[in-house]
Amino acid sequence: MAGVTLSVARRLDRCTVLGPGARAVIWVQGCPLRCRGCVAAETLPFEGGTVHTVDELADWLSGLPDIEGVTLSGGEPFGQAEALSALLDHVRTRRPEFTAMAYSGFRYEVLLRGGPERLALLRRLDLLVDGPYVSSARHGLRWRGSSNQRLVALTERYAQVGTEPDTSAGVEMTVEADGSLSWAGVPPTPGFRAGLEERLAARGFVLRAEAGRES
Image 1 (cartoon, rainbow, N blue to C red):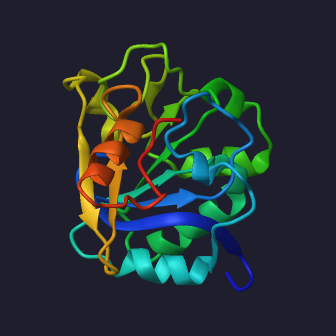
Image 2 (image 1 turned 60 degrees about the vertical axis):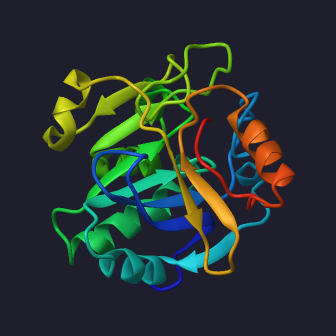
């Protein structure tokens, strides 16, 4: 994997509101889409983020205890599909049962017509949330920001998700090592981030720029 890198906006060791079970999360940097109302606007520019090697990220994921997989968000994971495929392959040499879920602003059918890098990443995923965020569509759904988005089971591992309650998983707050606050999850209502930042600021807290997933 020498020389293969990923541009990462943020990563989280453990999260229970962005996919099945307890999962690590990687938010990649850069997205070609500009969904109106995107809750993670700081991940949209391709400039910025932190460059990590695939080897470094694989070591991190492989060493995390008590997680069953990783959720890839952003940003647009399929904008860095080749590196993410290499990452999943590397981790699974050590943890064969490690699962992978991804968010994409592209529809599944569009990804199927993509290049070989996108198809390779699709083949390595167990679960996909597809489609752009639409602020006027229904909210409060499981792991999705708006009702036009779908949960697409790509393997048998999570085939049951379509039969489970379709209600919001909520959000999680994290106190970072430097004392700052961040959050992860899919907001159950539009305008969640602005309202949260306003309420925290009124109490003297500043929220880190990195946030959850709506787009």
